[in-house]
Every structure is written in C-alpha cells, then in structure tokens.
Image 1 (cartoon, rainbow, N blue to C red):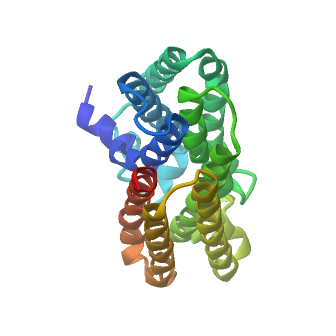
Image 2 (image 1 turned 135 degrees about the vertical axis):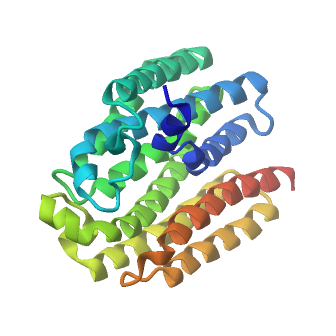
Length: 281
C-alpha cells in the first residue's frame, strides 16, 4: 500500500481547516484545559472523520475527476491508490471515528452515525443542488459542536454560533474554489453556485457568507465572555476574509491556492489562538 499516496488522497494537511475549530469548542466547553484524554480522542475523531469524508468524496467523484483536466492527477485516477484500498481506508477511518466517539461519551457514540452520514452525503449533493457548498460547510461546522459534546454532552447556544460561523466560512471559500470548474460543471450537469448562478452572483453570495462568519464568530465570543485578546484576533480574521476577496480574481485562477488554502489555514489557527487569548486575558 502506497502510504504517501493515501495521505495525499485524503489531503491530511488540510485537517488544519477543521481541527482548530474543534479545539475551540473543546476548550470553551471545558473553560480551559480539557485534559489529555479528551484532547487525544477529539483529535483522533476529527482526523478520522475528515479522512473518511475525503476518501468517500474521491470515490464518488472518480469518473468526474478522470474527465476534468484539473483533477486528472489525483491518486485514484492515476492508480497510485486503488479503489479497493480507498474503500478499506474509508471503512477503517469510520471505525476509528466511532471508537473515538465511544471513548468520549455515550451521546457522541449515538450521534457518530449521523456525522458519518453527513460526511458521506456531501459528495453527492453537487449532482442535484447548487447549495452543495453549504452542505460542506455544515459538515465542517459540526466540528466545534461535536468537540463541545465530547467535553460537555449538552447542546449550547455558543456551540451553535460557532457552527454557523464555520458553516458560512467554509461555504464562502468553497464557492470561490468552485469558480475553477464552471465550464466543466456545466458540461457534466453538475451544480455549483458559480455554474448555476454565474460568477457575479456567486461572488456576492461568498461575500455574504464571510460577512456572516464574522458576525457569528463575534456573537460566539461575546456569549462566551471572551476577553479583549479575542476581539483583537477577531478583527484580524475579519480583515483576512476581506483580503481573500480582494485577492481573488475569477479571470485569473493562479492565486486560488493562496486564497483557498493558505489564507483559510491561517483563519482556522488564528480563531483558535483568539479563543485561547480570550480565555487567558
């Protein structure tokens, strides 16, 4: 088994998108350090869940990836990873995820099939709705809620505010990313906001999403009673989101990796740092 190819297939480095927000829910639920056991189990659960969802996505999109010039180099298309190996990874990651949830508490275990179902379902929504970006956003938005439940098994308003903040954040940058495939999606009958509604409308919706991100993150910080350190970082994150849209040009996709991966990786880490500063200060 080609382990490096498997790691590339699941984009293991992109766990930085979800993990910091999971840690936000974790430390807010604990009011600080949650203990080593919750930290390890939540980390394992998040990485396993994301790897499961990414593998299902690659399997579901295999025939489209093989026809899209942008994605023909993906591991399943080239044969660096076989379909059988990918299925084994998906099953293994699902089992690891359920086991980690069981180690946290009963509520997490009971909800684990729901999370797996949502993680798998996203990959198919592009076949029938341009709202697929929001389904992806909601799937990652569950990260802070799930981590909160891992520490304190009850639903709270603060956790749901984080959910909406992450949902709109992910949907906003996924809309930008989808601008690369407008022609291909239209030719294949796939749906996305850029393909269905056009670039001007899609970019306006993406702006709205990131404005909502700033609002919901601000509300979450206020309700959690975070100190001034949080608000400094919140202002910085809001500025980064504005810069992302200033950087993005639909007629020039050369900066999409900077806008999509680098800046949004910074956003996730910065939000978690802001939560820690807000708790400490």
